[in-house]
Length: 230
Image: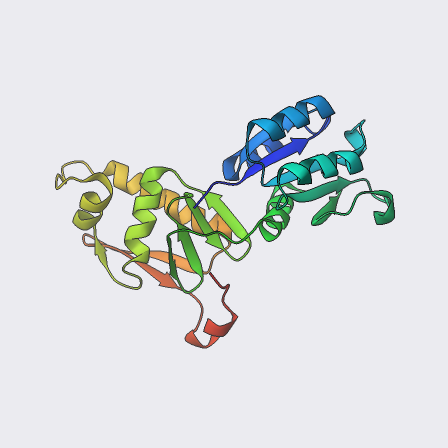
């Protein structure tokens, strides 16, 4: 799966670190503060979505929209607006959000606007692992994973509701049979539990002392029809 590229049009006020860090964790991010910089970014790479901080910009967005579509007819546009801004005063877009908002709110909205991922996905009861993109996804929320985290999550999703031994995890994730020091495994198990909590996903990673771990779902089987679709 491709990692989507976002062109963030802003000027000064939206360059706060939490916002940029949140976007960069999930997307390839390019930032432009002038129309010239934005056009250069469109020419240099394939942009999937333009995120425009409308109150901060000082150039004609309608004209820029036309230029962007001429280069990529499938490009998407998302607006950040001041409270009270009328939608007939801004260019048509695929979505918008009004100040003030949290980084997580913005990420959830963007996940709805960008096209459906295509690539190898391992899923169980709505919890999805995008192997190529390095994302763990639940509903409209997603978190970026490091390569070892991808391998660990994959080991559990390929054997859901089944005990996976510590020895098997060491072999699958780190390619070793050595069990003399498994502190790295312990740290990664703790990290996976934190990821599930961040996603607000109804899953638990249960410990069977001295043996291994089991990924379980907290939802009853009757809730299957209401689970997020891959």
